[in-house]
Image 1 (cartoon, rainbow, N blue to C red):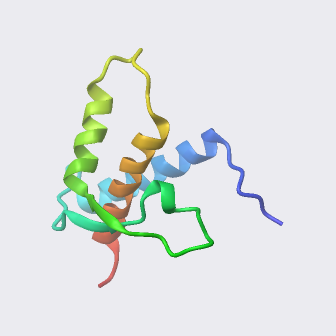
Image 2 (cartoon, helix red, strand yellow):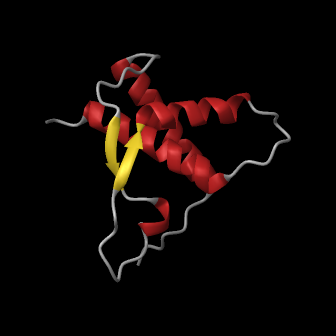
Length: 101
């Protein structure tokens, strides 16, 4: 049986492949026609004994957070869960661009 484990190298390669395909299909600068989206908050996403309470996510906020992370001091602490959550929002926005409606 497969396990949920994956190496950072595998994940990096998969993301590179995904982003290369995204750039080829949509260009170097992404334009998202939709901003707000329904979001399962990080703290609710793996609690399976009840229905999660949704909140609103924002592609604008996600992009701003990623840019802020990229321009911060390289020695500054990186909140992995926080930045990953915003990157997930952007990856979902990319998925919506490519998704047949």
